[in-house]
Length: 386
Image 1: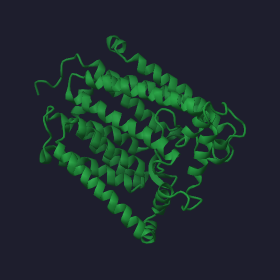
Image 2: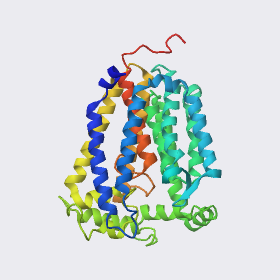
Image 3: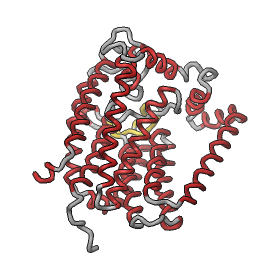
């Protein structure tokens, strides 16, 4: 065990410690004087979550990822069961029924866990091809079905953000998994045609679509789309967060208004600034300079992960890491993009900075699996003869 601990990626661990400090300080700033929106003392909970997260990371790193992937089908099945069970035994938060309430005021979101289980499952399926071109019938279609099942279930919660992440994970892993270029062209054609058709239908039948979705309790989707496509014409209540977010980000200018500014826009007007909208607090208090440094740290973290993928001794390890990289890249882009008005508003958190216990623990576990690939790359494959 000591030999494995010495092989941990200490640069990545230092990056995570830096994220812990930044996250805790920003959550403190976003909640200390925010009587309207922010629960108090979440910064204590954030430190607790990080300490638990480091324990989870190290435990995941010490376990050979190939043993975990061996039982990926069982873990995937368990994840589907949890996603279904949350409809019957879960709690509703912010309009989505996707959490299990746990003792000590904790909660657990199966949709977050499903991202990791899906990565393991898809990586296991891709590794069967040993780097050869993927077959439509043997590889692409089965993977599509495997991803479609949790996508539909999570979409029904409704949790559009995590559902989209499942698709992004699949696309990123299929690309690295050596999908045929003809499949890529066909996929792009379908996506482009689908987007054009969806926009035309949405524009021409806006009221009818809104009524249909409202009948199923998903009328807020239309409000979010309106806010994204045309904020000026959208419902002022629906576009409130976006307008205030852009005002706060712009007020930060180059170097920011300063940490713990008393009369800040994000503290007084923006809901859930400690969670989904935490980048607003960073941009307002530390400006373009501070925001750029955060993005640079993210880049360094992703770079370390990609290097680990390149040096992996197995296709399985490479595919797992690329799936995790795809997940992080999209979450970072989507979270920041929605606050700048270039992406639709969803409930996706900013990795390692936003407050959220399940999200943080799953992200730390994901990095633990990445380190497991690094630690065990020189080890003999335990299933080489099976």
